[in-house]
Amino acid sequence: MQRVNQELGNEDLADGLAAFAAIKSGNEEAGKIFRQYCLDVAVMILNLQTVINGEKVVIGGGISAQEILIEEIPPTVRGNLAGQPDFGPAGNSAGNRGGQVQK
Image 1 (cartoon, rainbow, N blue to C red):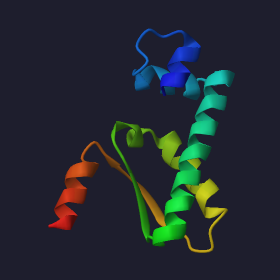
Image 2: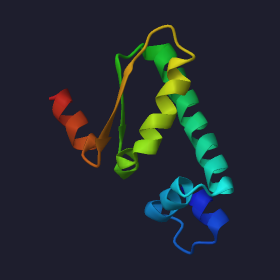
Image 3: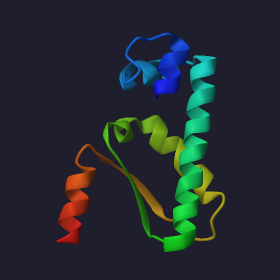
Image 4: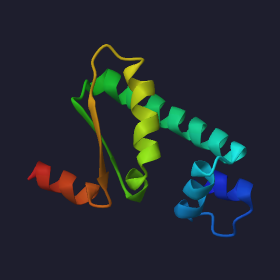
């Protein structure tokens, strides 16, 4: 989201809320950057899926609270895979949850 904030001229490049506000308001350049970001993430997921053939994809961190992100990435991934992994947000506790699963 740094690139969105940079494009908007926001001093706080880490302000995800401002970036998503611009994306949701229909700012054309912010939307273009966001769609490219989602495509980049989808390509990373596709690469991982090719190697591990996972059943679930969990996107963690505060960014996963943005429904628009969870709406944008899965269709791109699903459109390019034979298998269809489940998607879901994990929020800021993703690391803790992953650690619990490993115990």
